[in-house]
Length: 131
Image 1 (cartoon, rainbow, N blue to C red):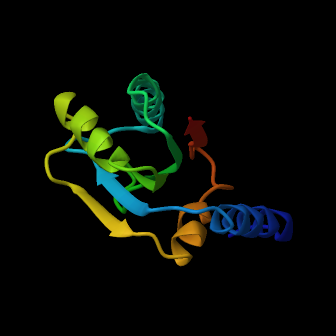
Image 2: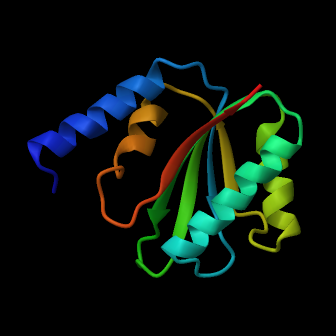
Image 3: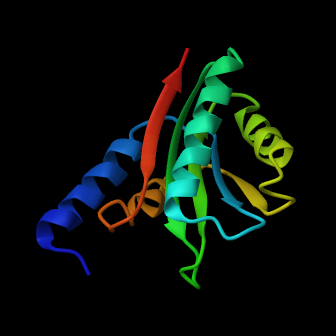
């Protein structure tokens, strides 16, 4: 699946992320089939929205294809009180999700989980921080 160099990149991202303090690991699945470019645009707008809320937060997100390969969903690592609720609000307001999300307390393995597809083609991800 991955070359040795790509495996090292994935491990490095996982290690880097696991050295940070996170509160929540979340997964959001869209109501509709959302392709890679649409997902990236949605996430860019979400990042702008969160920054406009004057929240202190840190977030890493990664897009993943659904098992049918026709759509995408996102995984998040989140640090900051109530940020996951702001994400829910924004995506629901846009009509993109209903109750297709899950929030779990962060556990270290989540850092490796969100890193696993970083070297795949057509995968988008980003780290943002706002103080």
